Image (cartoon, rainbow, N blue to C red; front, side, top):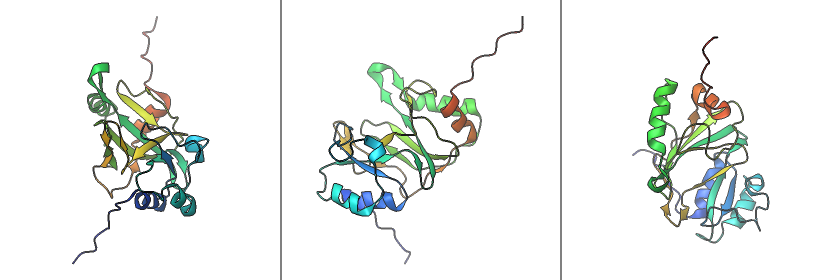
Length: 195
């Protein structure tokens, strides 16, 4: 028989799994806000220390788990967040498909999850630090979580539903260079015709 990977089931087991991957975690409320009594500086107070994480998540389900994005011991973690909100005209998946065609590069399979609202998040390593940006430079319905940011991860749940990994235990891949550049610098301004 093959060696099967045990999938964590409790909040604490998941938190410990994340710190094994070198990610810093932080406790959040269901409204996605950090538990400021425990992490007064939000994602900047996130930890990858087992004793701290065990204290935070000792009571299963009391808090949601978030992963701090940006620089960590393995590099720079960037999350591309595709929002779906028909009332606000956000169709992140459609914008994402158009962006991939525009950038014209290969997008390897990378770790991804479905958010509580039904959106998608793609986890990437980048060479450079990527700024954290809501309503990013990527296009309507796409946000970037980078330096000093965070994202909720399983087994978190918000008022719209649970966060679920789509392809766990896959790991984040290196972001295509064109994607990283767009996340940092935005879309190039259209060139002006010579006068």
